[in-house]
Length: 202
Image (tube, rainbow, N blue to C red; front, side, top):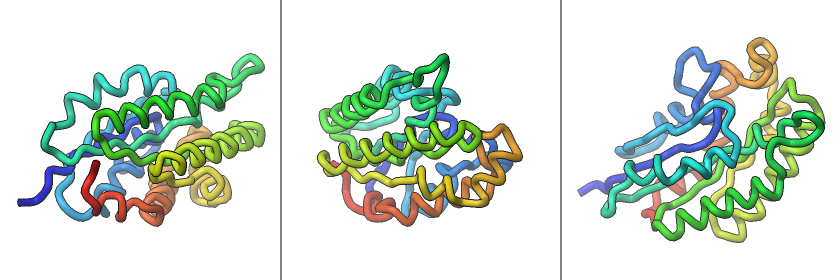
């Protein structure tokens, strides 16, 4: 009997796939490249910060898990946290990392396997945003290492990627089109994605 792999993706507009004319984003493309049967749920919401994601996470994830299934949660946020408004960031980096800590603790308590995809860059937000987001990603990665949770870095690779930057600037300044999301998909798949999905969950 094949295992019942149930996977929730929770986060912001990049998880939702905003800007992709094919309406697949990186989540749909990653699932397309994933072996086996996966019951997947995209819980990305545009403009969500880590505060928003933490607030809604378990009330949305819990109904989509089953006691005897291999339940997984893919988390990706942080880009909106690092947006500066009226001289301060929306969510302080320490608070964002604390929210991720709470989510990972919740996964462990519920026997849900977790994986974290680092925050993509917002091209038109400038160098300050990129610097803050890159530092946040490093802190997230350190947390994940300490918890033995896979972390896939995206920030620097996408900031230097011509397809991502070109499509974002041609659109709303933040979200790419299909080529940019394809590049993000490649980064996720080249990480520990296949290893993580292939092994039995917690």
